Amino acid sequence: MFMRKRKLAFFICAGLSLILLLAAHARADDGADNATDWYFGAGISLYVVDVPDYAPVWDVEVSGLGPLTISESSRITLAGGPIAAPLFEATLGKELDDQWFVETRFEYAYVKNRSSHSNWGSDPALTHGTVFFPLDGVDSNTRGLWSTAQMELEFEFQQYGAALVAGKTFSGDDWHIRPFAGLWFQERDTTYRMDFGDGGFNVPTYFVDDIETMYRGLLVGVGLTLPMNGWAIELETTHGVASAHTQYSGFWDTITSLPGTSSDLSLDKYEWAYRGTLQASVSIPVSNGWEFGLTGGLRYLSYVPRLMSSGQANDAKLAGPAHLVGESSFSGKLGLEIVYSF
Image 1 (cartoon, rainbow, N blue to C red):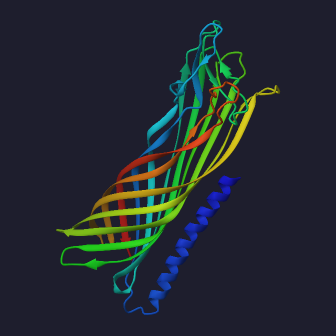
Image 2: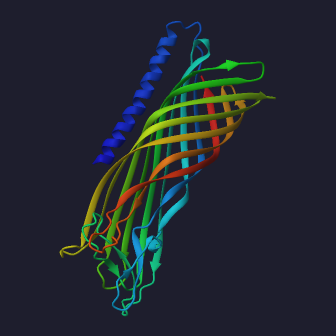
Image 3: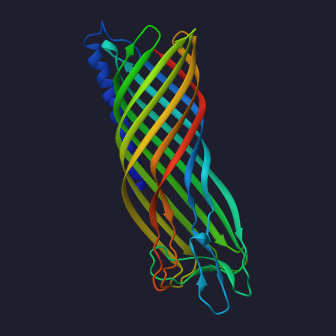
């Protein structure tokens, strides 16, 4: 439910950006002698982004009748690191009088993939296995398998964002500088769905972990354009701060009616985040009003959430509940763009 509400809020913000842009256009038309052109740009890129590790289960050992041996290194990482996705971007802008401009920017990236994993078990010796704990940390009793575990994981990543910026262009003989400032929004969602079992007679367990983060903040930036023999080289950097609101919803369920065979948890976390971007492009006019170019960029985001799955407490009486921690993330893109001025 909250996912739909957050997406609705995002599209409302995007709609407001367009409304404000149209209002700026109407205002410019009041003194139409100085009004200049609209421009629209669209691009598609290969987007490589670093995502946190996902480690919902543990590799454990038992020595004779001794206690369970478990540590942070016992977590089994099933997903994480750099992933690749297509990134779609669009910009709609209006050049106003006295070289002022206003524009709204949009982006969207999505990827879903599946992977298979296994972890050895010592059945029937029951000394080595793959286990997990209640998400809310109500106890330290293990659930899982002492036979070899088979895990089928589906990973889904989605990122979309918008920005509304305004600024002024300063021009020289062979350069243009465009400082600007504005608002930015970004939603970053990751969903994990996993079937956990041994492929045999044991009843499988189904896991779902959904993590959604909305960033809302302010940014400043500057762009530099250098015309060169009909070509144009453009450099741009932005720096923004935002409030980051993360919502987590997760559960696992073993399809039986016995107690202790399911667990669920919801979490909220608020943090501050910094985002820095650096982008470069090379473009050339290809027709009246049309430009075609190659673009690339880097991005740093100081906070993305990582789910630390529930584990065993030191006293073996209460399990450590699942919780969220923050990590930084780098990403990069390389692609093509086209711009039309009208």
